[in-house]
Image 1 (tube, one colour):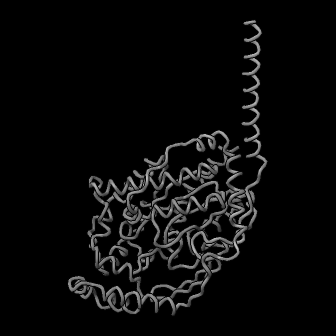
Image 2 (image 1 turned 45 degrees about the vertical axis):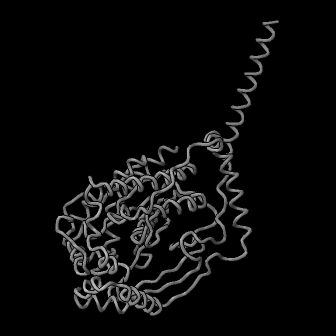
Image 3 (image 1 turned 180 degrees about the vertical axis):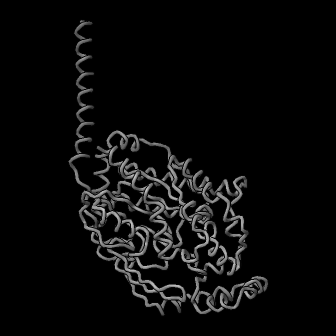
Length: 411
């Protein structure tokens, strides 16, 4: 009797083991056989799909065309395809403020890979004015749609550590669904894909209708914004603004200069020095919050089989003498030691490390060209076409190693 009970128990255990292994095997097979779903006909990942904007100032002129995914990039085929796909998430330095899209570093990388005959594509997910919390929110929406192999989180030196937002909610502890997802990643991914497909196919209109603005429209809007900002200044703030050199004041009032950037120098002239003290409690808070956002990006990327790396984007006043002088002209406190410190990289690197991510830097390459005056727009401060080209050349060797290593690991 005892022997029969033991045999039956072993048979049940063996059957259960076979069942679990079969289900796990089916999940893995599903991951191999099931192609990623097609992209929706249109979606507003960053901007209204089909939007068109034109800009012209005394420093630059450029045009913006938004594709059907709401990105400033070329149209993508709806089918995923076999190319090694890189998603670049960032702010205006990734978006390409001040330059046409073909001169942006993401497009320059695409051109390089195309000419080299490599099946690699870079998708530009940049949007001006964003920071780590917005990067994480975008990643959670875009990665399931785009299915990249590699995610670049392009953190702007100084600025993105300062722009981490309020205290975030704690990352949720693994619940039952999370444990199921880890055991059956492909099955749960299929369920989410079906839910997402139903959501997009059920839409009857664009959430954000596209618009079209001429360069004059945008200049007039910026001028109106500048006047509204100035009218709200206190007497002390007006006195500070009035101390700026005349060309800066005129450009501000005429909509020829980014009003928000000038306003920042009026309200906080030490903006570029903040977070340079690694021992400061507020800097530590900023690093911690940035790490939280990066952890969110890493999680969603891993859920969809992608690797994530952080890239420290070189902001002019930390790497270029002319750019530092330009920010000084619009009222920022710009000590010379900003061109020698590595604190702006250390803060990003520390946040990345806490999130379990590698961090890549190109500061040395830019500081070797520290006296070039053509890399950043003098007063606007964003990279010129030459600045984008230098970034592409500086980052390319590391990127090619990343791609090669990931392709080898995936074989």
